[in-house]
Amino acid sequence: MTPYQAYEKAIKSGERIPELEPFISKNAFYSYLYAIYVIKGRFILAEPVISNSNDSYLSFYYAICVMKGKLPDFMHNALLLSNNEFTKQYVEFISKNP
Picture (cartoon, rainbow, N blue to C red):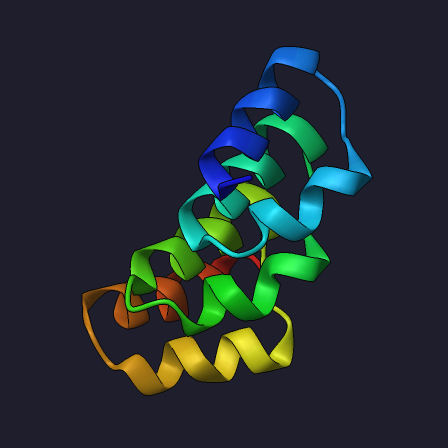
C-alpha cells in the first residue's frame, strides 16, 4: 500500500487507523496532512520523516498548524539548520508562540 492510498483510506474513514500509519509515515506530505485532518494533533511516528524532508515548509507548517508552537528539539534544530525563508518565519513564529 502506498502512503497516498493509506492516507485516502484514513480520510474516508474520518478516523485514525493505526495499522495504516506505518505506510502514511513514509511520506512527509501525507504525514503532515494526516496529522492535521485525521489525528488533529501530533503524528509522532512521522516527525522524523517530516523533519528530514527537503521541504522545510512542511516542518514550518507542522509547527504552526499541528504543534501551535515550538517543534520538538530534533525538528527545531533541523529547521534552524536549513537556514532559508522558512527558518526566519519559524524563529519569528516561536518568539510569539513559545
